[in-house]
Length: 369
Ligand SMILES: Nc1ncnc2c1ncn2[C@@H]1O[C@H](COP(=O)(O)OP(=O)(O)OP(=O)(O)O)[C@@H](O)[C@H]1O
Ligand SMILES: [Mg+2]
Image 1 (cartoon, rainbow, N blue to C red):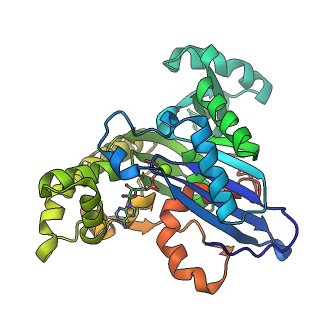
Image 2: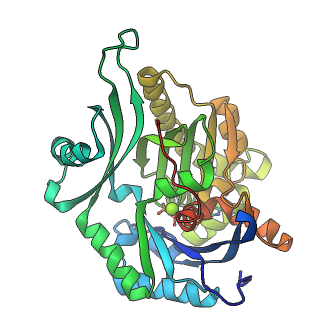
């Protein structure tokens, strides 16, 4: 946890993921011969986390005070001996709005003028109160048989309330880090887990408060959906069904999961309906995407701390009948062999923070050229 290969120069980048259950930090740096090395990493669970699990109005990282979050970041950076101060931070999916637009082909400048007009009709908050970002993720000809038909653009539009952006800027300042980038967490996770993957993937980020379901095709986000069934809900269901407190239920979840054998049956019975509810939403999204674009999902990629739920991978692969892979955000990153078992264990939960730290270290992907 406190390993640090940089003896002198702080030339790395920090990825800071403020999740609902914890703050996670990863420091990465470019090394000679073009590789990327792990500088350090650290995690701090939100104070009183298990007590808060049972409190329905808690649950969003945004409800913590700026100064509290900044203190947590400072403490992690200090404890893990981070040397860099340039940082990227992520915004949760539940604080953002994603949509896909089809527009006639136009220049980047024309697009910048057109987007706010389009957004006004689609974004449920007044346009003056949101920050807009967009990316051309595809170009297509609606009538491939007609050479004169106008090419169209597929644009991914992301809107984030201005107050959310302002909050992160304030937190970064209070934590003493130089904020280099702010992005919705799905972009970070895609960069960490799927940046070199050209297939149609379903990315499932099962965290503490929410599960994000995303279709990633050719490395680009195509559809995104968010639901409130996730790790906290699993623990709550177990506590209820076993008649134990949240702390005991959390321990039970981590050891028994949904293994479906012997003494674990009770735990599975409580959790499987919740996993099935996530799967139903995932199936709906895959079907909508297939009907619209004719691409079938070939693989389910898992990220987020709840990915480690015992029995989850086996259950998902048998029910979906697809390849199910636990995401490894540290693939291709150099770190000492001795860390291997820990890195394998923490990997899924650190996907967002690794993706953030990679932001300035890997080339930006360009789409549909
Ligand atoms: N071995 C395990 N088995 C089952 N669940 C686990 C295990 N390890 C961690 N978790 C669960 O993972 C969740 C935390 O995951 P993660 O760190 O991705 O969440 P987060 O980023 O803080 O939350 P969110 O993304 O929803 O804001 C907790 O609910 C925790 O109980
Ligand atoms: Mg998270």
